[in-house]
Amino acid sequence: MRYLVFSDIHSNLEAFEKFLGQKKAKSVDKILFLGDLVGYGPDPDGVIGLFRQLPHLKAVRGNHDKVIADLESSALFNPAAAFSAEWSKLNIAPANFQYLKKLPKGPLVVDRFITICHGSTFDEDYYVFSQFEATESFRFMGTSIGFFGHTHFPVIYYLRNEKLDVVPLSENARIKLDRNTRYLINPGSIGQPRDKNPAPSYIVFDSVKMEISFNRFTYEVGKTQRKIRDAGLPELLASRLEAGV
Image (cartoon, rainbow, N blue to C red; front, side):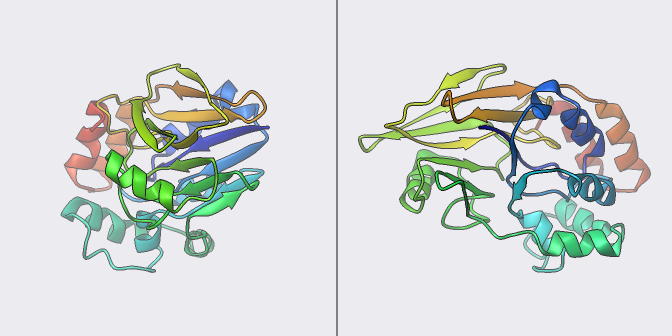
C-alpha cells in the first residue's frame, strides 16, 4: 500500500494546490495528514474546503487547528501566530469551522503498524527537535513506524537495539526501511518550510517495498506573500516563506 504523508499546510492555498497536483501525490492508496491545516497563512477557508475533498484520509489536528477552532486560547502563541489565529477565526465559513473543530486528537494508529501525531506520541503539542524527545516519543509509540509534524523540519529518527540515530532528509531521497528497526519520520511542511529551503516537502511511503521517498516542489511564493500582506497579516509571515525559516 502507498501512503501520502504530509503536514503543516498553514492556510497556504497556493502550496497546497500545487502539492495536490504532484504526480507522486496522486498515485497513492491512503492519505495521512499530521496536523495544522490553518494558522499563519491567508487562506484558511480555502485550505479547509479543499482538504475536505481528499479521499481515503486519516488526519490529526495541530495546535493551530485547536486554537483557531476555539478549543484553546491563543495566549501562549507568539504575537504573529496569535494575530493570525484571531484573524483566521473571522475568515472561516461555519461548516469549515465545525470540521476543523472535529479533527481527531493524536496520536492515531493507522492500519495497526503506523502511528500519526502532530507533535509527539505523548503530547500532541510537544516539539520533537532532538534525540531526547525522539526517545520519549518511541517509548509511547506501540507501532514500528511513526509520522509526526509540528517542527516543519524533515528528518528521520531510527531506533534499533536500543540505539538511536538521526538523519535529515535530503531532496529526492529514497530510503529502504528495515523491518527490525523502528522509525519516527517528519515529512517537513507544505505551507511553511523551516529548514532554510522554501520548497514544500512530503513523503510517499510504500509499505510493500518498505521504502519512503522524500519529495520537494516549488510554488508561487510571491502570490501567497501578496495575499498575506493584502490581508494585513504580520510581515514576518510573508517574508519567512521565501527564506524557508
